[in-house]
Length: 585
Image 1: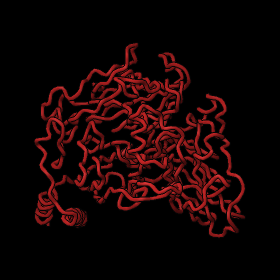
Image 2: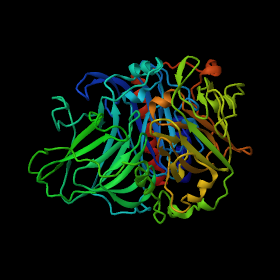
Image 3: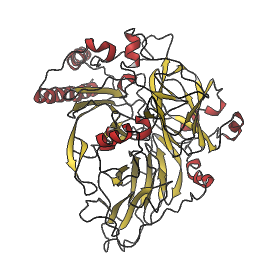
Image 4: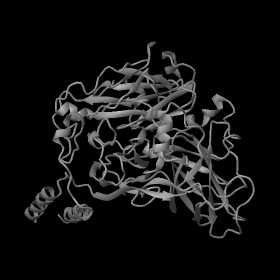
């Protein structure tokens, strides 16, 4: 029997061309294309995945191997990225320009990665050319293994909310506005799962398609909320219902009830909501612009309907207003400071989330990353970190390293801001493997910003207004700080995070506000193991794409759509068969 299993596994490896372990596989085909939709009543071109807007759920379980075969049916290059998925040892799959060559139009590329030691709520989205402003995004759920209990009773169901600000112009038109040196201005609305607002008053045009969520009285639902928008923080609330916060971006939180919750660009949260009202009517679900003049920005509001099976009629009347106080800068911080780690709960592993005593580890380096309002550099509007507006290398970093391409990038990113003219550069952080670094996001821009680090989650230990200084470390939370991958920073404020650099690769640090990211507010950390033996970083995949200085190594793709579908399904069949044989063996 053992010999039979070994022969099958060898055949599988040769036929599929993928690495495998005992952990199961899930496989998806993602066909990324344009469709016409009218989410705000105006026909426009949006980016769909498999004809869906938003795209389909990517559903996996801790340690599963995930295979996503992406077909680019757009008229421009494409990359999909997976914010919060750590890609352990495998930045080759991260889906940003510093790690991957773009997928040309009419080509396909298969991402292959493991969701190693992860659980929680995430999303995927395009990372190039402002495409996220037109769609291409969808939710990711990583479930606990059966042997790891969740720290709350099993919910009766799940609801997913993909929220974000929206313009009735597509990403190409919005790109042209930024390229002309102008800001985008106020969005045209907010979408909830790709739909416009319910007509809650006369300001909403007739004929807009909205969403209704059907629930059962007395049941408790896990609600996952993702802000995939361009630049607007949104306050999420369900009329007359409490939101019990339980998880954010892969880590369980200390459970706390909120009447409404601010979800910033790029962030993901899980709440438990119990349907405990008397259902005299339906209820409003609202996602509205936050930290702006909300009277002027009234149109930037998404409205859906919560419908109990025993509801006695449609909802009417004014929308519920947020009860969370943001009237002063410091009161606005009360809610994010209340997000703390559930230190006794198990996450992806049996050991409690609080078993990593981050507050007792010596900091090896400090990086202060300062953002400023966009400025003109070489005649074009650009955004900066520490005075550098990042220019993506034409050859991805680790490909350049492996193939000895000189001058593809520089490892001289400053660890703090200096008083010198802003410039365009390919400057990156030369980080030290197994270091334990402190990163200060100092927001001297005029708008709230969200910052994200690929490849890692970090401990959010402090935040305040003003300019960060060393004495601020005395106010840090060194016990139960939440660990996550995307954090907001208020204008005129700072947020401090701690990161344990145990994941070799090249990892993007960026602002998630799409306008600022497009204008260059990003950099990368390059982390290499000087004693690399193949155990801390994977080799490039067999299907790696080449570009830039290595474009002559790239072979043309010659296949029909039918052949691509057949190959994708054959691979899936092999993986299913593998899982069956592994169980049998």
